[in-house]
View 1 (cartoon, rainbow, N blue to C red):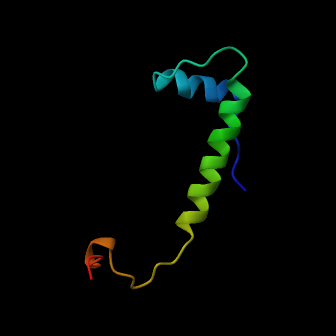
View 2 (tube, helix red, strand yellow):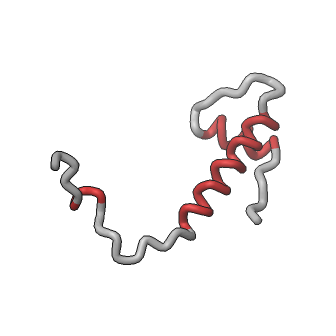
Length: 61
């Protein structure tokens, strides 16, 4: 399980990134950030094995 951002942390990160949050949006921003972190964490667990990079495929045939 990923430790979630607090609304205050989400506001700080948004400000640092130059994304002003309207008052009261901190909780929503924290929830969205947590969801994104969970999605990325699950993608990191996928084992692609010997699968070649996408550039190795020829989609024109």
